[in-house]
Length: 132
Image (cartoon, rainbow, N blue to C red; front, side, top):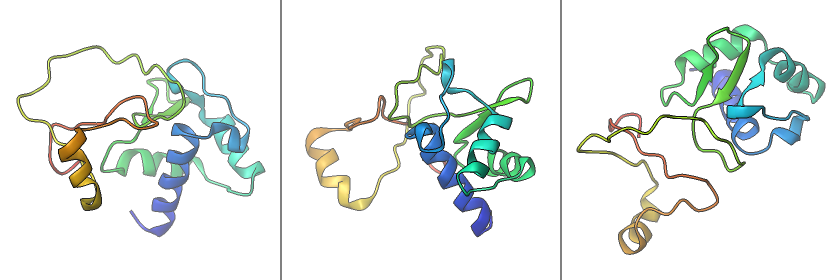
């Protein structure tokens, strides 16, 4: 992704995971928001984003941070919420090996205390090292 798409991805992460109120939207059940409403709210708050840009960011985000609904009308963040959101993921048996991406400065704390969710609702783990 180029600089513009990276900025959009970071902005959507902030809005859809942490502060939907920042642009005046409310997340529906499952964390979904109507794409038209999201784009209108972004524009109204000085951050115009096109539907093509949104689609590109969702499709090309290497960590699969976002999902578009089957009908193509809604979008949501796939993980990492600090707001209360039930993503309705079905429980499943995890693979034998899982990965957690973190910054080096947190390693000592993780080794001492384990993985801690902090202000988020869950610790995000991945089944492949690249996406972690």
